[in-house]
Length: 190
Image (tube, rainbow, N blue to C red):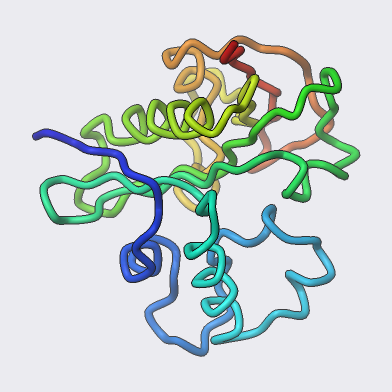
């Protein structure tokens, strides 16, 4: 299996990874951390997908996609922290004043889990941020100590996943997800 990670510039592939089965459903679309909380709560149904379609057309696009041949098999949301709700999040600290990028969602399609695709996605997110001039990249994964995580909450990744990609713990956070503390993991790209 040769996994290729590319910028998320194909809307139908982004939709396949983060969109709903029903177009009027109010699923995340990976907007929960990308836009202010009030806007996220007010945005309903098809308007959510329309906003993501706009993001896909922007430079930089909202993340990266993993492909196995022509089939999209994974997604990672990555963008400058200043453009996300992490810029104002009181539970996730700022380590310094660098214009860091954040990676906050890693999803692998059912039927493709356990194949190492999340590792490819995180590596691709790092390269994407580096290619766009990011001085550093952060993630806010769960520090689960090897314990099982509910799949609906696994999107944040694990500390171990980030450590394998070369990230180091930069700070504790006050954020808890699925009963596990989140840690701020960081990789210097300079």
